[in-house]
Amino acid sequence: MITFRDVHVTYPTGTKGLDGVSLEISDGEFVVVVGLSGAGKSTLVRAINGLVPVTAGELEVNGRRVDGASKRELRRLRGEVGMIFQSFNLVTRVSVLNNVLMGRLARTSTLATLVGAYGSANKDIAFDALERVGIIEKAYTRASQLSGGQQQRVAIARVLAQQAGVVLADEPVASLDPPTAHAVMSDLRRVQRELGITTVVNLHFLDLARSFADRIIGMRAGKVVFDGTADQADDSVFEDIYGRSLRADDVVAAPPVTIDPEDRA
Ligand SMILES: Nc1ncnc2c1ncn2[C@@H]1O[C@H](COP(=O)(O)OP(=O)(O)OP(=O)(O)O)[C@@H](O)[C@H]1O
Ligand SMILES: [Mg+2]
Image (cartoon, rainbow, N blue to C red):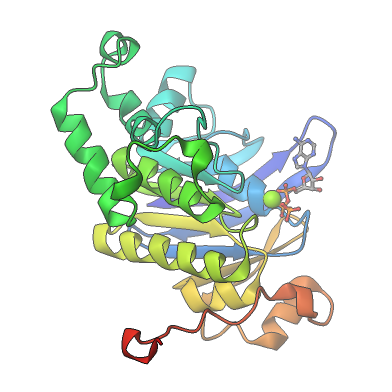
């Protein structure tokens, strides 16, 4: 469970990233955060694993306070919270398998990881993670040789290998073309359901938000201005969140057409 109690984040420049956010995210929820650029979406997500310091209020993750946490407590928190980024953040010169094994770092002794000795139990976990996102055949390929969609699947496999109870994803599909964005969101959603991982995802595109979220949180100027189900978030709700009428670039596109193998030439 993630609990925000009147959380404020004020950056050193004086800009308010969060302006009095109170919310509760239950275990196993899939929450999508939407809002215009600068609304505070990344700040909200990054506050959860302490990447952005809370300047007032209380923030708890799994019963432990994030605000005011020591370096050691933050390290432990980050072991329990997986993070997925728009830019994938893989080590592109090493294999896919090695990238996924990095998800095991927090749970493996430093000496073992220094000599690359993750052990067979960790490798089993990494292969299982790769299988769940459908790229097990790429295990020994260098990450640099993968497409964007495949790289983001590796990043998902890495957080699965981390066995994190909470996954945060900051614009995970913003660098992908529309069909790939849908496919990667579907993968993320499927593994989230299979494993019951609490997931908080920032998305620009309202059609993706509607198709994948259990719950949508709308942000504007650092405040939560909408909190409801995907069904409740109709166009007028989005216009309220955005403070303007909707445009073509607020949606990614129609989902890919699935072709029945029987119909293929
Ligand atoms: N490191 C920082 N230093 C100072 N101000 C920042 C910093 N990061 C974000 N901000 C400011 O805080 C506010 C919220 O930013 P945030 O990155 O959370 O928005 P966002 O909703 O994720 O936007 P985008 O959709 O463009 O990613 C903005 O006004 C932004 O300029
Ligand atoms: Mg952002």
